[in-house]
Picture 1: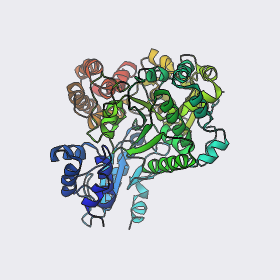
Picture 2 (picture 1 turned 90 degrees about the vertical axis):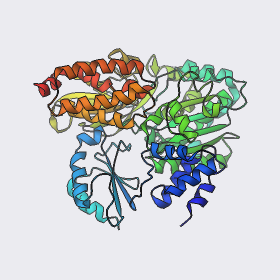
Picture 3 (picture 1 turned 135 degrees about the vertical axis):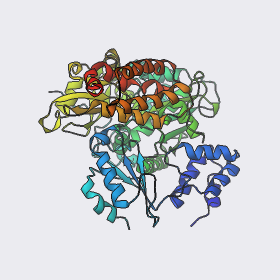
Length: 148
Length: 406
């Protein structure tokens, strides 16, 4: 696994590249470890507070540790009327966690998201940004079993 | 029976959008060649005469926007807004997935018009597959040499609806929090890294190759006279055909929903349609014969916006849907300006109260006042549009609210 230092260094010469660097770190770690934010601040010549401010502004970036698979349930209006609330309940009960939490084995993190732009087949769940369409509460056990 | 009219999406699924050769075989990049021959002045005039207006939501004449860029500035940028965060909208994704090269050609045409050598595509973080697709498409076009010295870089957002606002988008490309700037100065004069910048939507750019090859007159003759061309729309909710269509802009709401969309699902009756995404107005049945173009929608207090259509059948609880939307805006408000930060919080709080049956008529009156304040005083389009779903449903579906306060 590449170090956060090496990953950030690859974006050093890109103007405004801190968000791209954060994406690259998250592709490795699924979140932004404290030292990654500190390193980004140093490399891009901004204060640690500013680097932290960027890291916490965007909902796809997280400074809290997350699981291997990030499950996002869309709760925007088209998914809401298609039954998103019932799917969230099924996800919470199957995973034994609440929205915002990570399973004890570090496998799944459950988040809510706003529209993911796949509204042709609502409700939509994404796992590590891969969309799953027309999800029903009954399908949740089978969907979760796909991720080892 | 109204029919689709495909221009941008004529060859959908017939070509590989990443491969420049397949696009060229269909006549692609001839618009760019023509633009280079015309030179900036005539090119901008041609685009102005086509009547092309921004497809992102503000509906500003594209050629006019370009004409504000000072030609003498040493560095200028072309920025494509692919941050389509309006819930129910996915038309820019479809345009990229079906015809990405037209977007690249359109950006290069804009580059010729304003004298820019560098373009950026800001793609929302929810679309990593589109980022990959665009990078391949750019590599293919660059390898061919057809873009000459015009470069395009893709940057990925990270889940912030407000970054669809052009100055917030610019802030995000610069690596900052995506908070909108005060205007003026407008990006055309001082945008990305303080340089003059044109920000246009994917769909706007993708129209340009066709305007150049077929002529401004041809484009101006399609659809509504004051908002000509086609519009890619996406249908969601309680409609039979939940999919996308490309339609001339003089089509009516009813034609889109019933002729193309197949009407309401399950044999139920129509209650409302929200057009333009989650920031749009809710429209009742008696206004369905209104055309979808920008000005006709404005005339009924609505907006075409992104072209998303959320159809609700007779069984839907309008107050519940609007309460959900109020939570969306509270979450997506960036917090920079008070009317939006505080206003979206209060909208959500009052809507929750009404939705749970604990509200009063006084709450409804307060929402109307709050809505007026936000529409006038919020810094950017997010805060100005946030109360529109509330305001429009208080106007057209007041009985639904009353049912919950009695």
